[in-house]
View (cartoon, protein in one colour):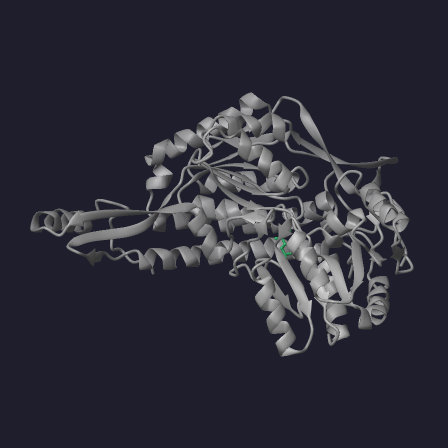
Length: 539
Ligand code: G3H
């Protein structure tokens, strides 16, 4: 494997196709508050690409900037969301489900027109390969469409009355209030939208802050948000979290915190809210998902799933396999095959055909990974693949660390990068103890062929993690499946249908079944006087 040199492209004589060429510099100066797209004239935050290039004869990684908003600007976004929600009396929370769906459908059309721009920005801002960037965009559109279908089902089921003990009731789901949505840098579009869209469609108003990396790619959508939704329903803030997010949390006016990121930041944010019981949290956090390779595992399957599981998008997935326990009897064989497979991965730039390993966007990430490797080597690990351990600027060569043990940082820390720690076990109690003692509890993968062994392991693991994968990598999808975790890995459950539930609460209208009440209700229904009390069926 050859590590690409840092100066990989020259924007003048380039190997990038015109379609992938970013207009440099790309300065985002606008933000959306209260239905207006305003220009920011204050300080800006520079955006660095993980890709180094030559522009106007100069080496650079600077591709643009975005507004570094301050407390005042952020509080304006909050006022707008609070005003638009108006304690549940605003236009959006009282709109019928059918109408809210129409707004989201308008948004989908406008968003689809921006696919090319978003894919390009995903590649430049976070170094995601073209194939994965396109997949992220398409998966997000599919998620929104599935959300609409699911909401229709939910609404259809609620379009009837329930009668019990002489009481008649209509039970539906209502909005919760103002939602603060923040997604992670590794899926800046998809994971943000898996909370943003359900929050909106259930009638909440939203303040949306893009992740620290992957900001610019949201800029082309500002106009779509503005056109598709009523004023104040969605508001954007940009800047330093402490400056713009803390005041929002401290105001006590945030009803739901939807955050996908580190548990450390989630804890800080939750503590800032003065009314902990008022605040609902929907959190996707850290993970250190293990794979357990049983003695009778099909090595070909195990290697191929572990490669995808550990190294897709350079291992920068919360669901990535981050520790591999291999039964001692097949340890050498597994390690050899894994190393061969890793050496075949193609490193390069996001638009290179067939590229699998791309530059890392987090600042100083390669140094952090290098230190993890060095720490492991100092404590007795070895690098099992030829190109392991090499790095160059933002490129880090996928590295298999063998004979990892509990004294090493890599055993405990979530590497979120292309290091694959592997260790032999003698008895199943060893990986199980690791999982029990772990701070995290998202997923695990087990590889084997004996139904008895697999069943026993499954029955133990389902009480430790939230998804057990058999002969398959760990992953979030398909998005209709529940995505959650135990311990420090998550709070709340996301899936197309679960997300609609977490951003809403059941509300019912009930009345004694007297003739007088029935008469009133008949009039309400016949004349479509209420959006909540309604037997209309969405087709
Ligand atoms: O970073 C965590 C993502 O939810 C992972 O999603 O498993 O579909 O790549 P994925």
